Length: 226
Image 1 (cartoon, rainbow, N blue to C red):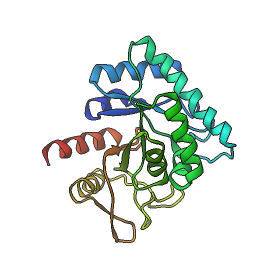
Image 2 (cartoon, helix red, strand yellow):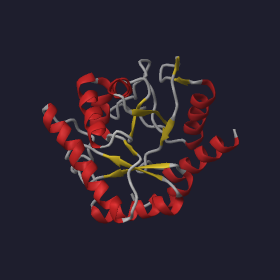
Image 3 (cartoon, rainbow, N blue to C red):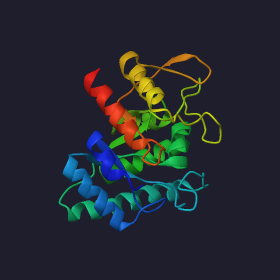
Image 4 (cartoon, rainbow, N blue to C red):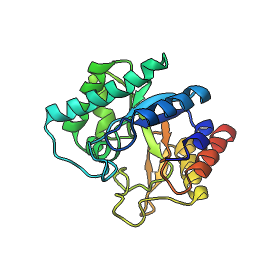
């Protein structure tokens, strides 16, 4: 997104686009180099083949097509990683694919199976409390329950859809406070003011966010000091 190098010192894992919603071999190489330089874990960020909408529009595919979608993108990034004598650490589906797997057990199961078949040591990052995590655990692969610094939550624990006005949290202080609440209290305040339980094992910051660099710095500092 043009600010990757600035963000790298403040994160511990990176989700790298595999060319289907963004990026190409050059950006994959460049990002892996940055990861190695800053000791950041390398993750695949597979998505629908939808560069026009940045992978944020759902596409109806069969189970076999979703399986192949994941496998092909893992192969692409693995081949690039091999040229640096390194390997993948995790997988995090992107955009519409992530949202579908969070709510749909069938999609979540397919993705988990693809990850396990490809490399059963990979960690699947999924929305905390979602089908993604449940089905991956049922499949027997490692998971990391993901929470979001820059997105608001609904009462059911799902993210507020991007189509709604209050979906994004663009104030750095507000986003940092949300993370602190999640980590310290195991809870999050929803858009309606309810406080619901949540498990925070990895924190997502979107690289295309308006204040992504400042947010990464702020969250990094509060996690280290608080």
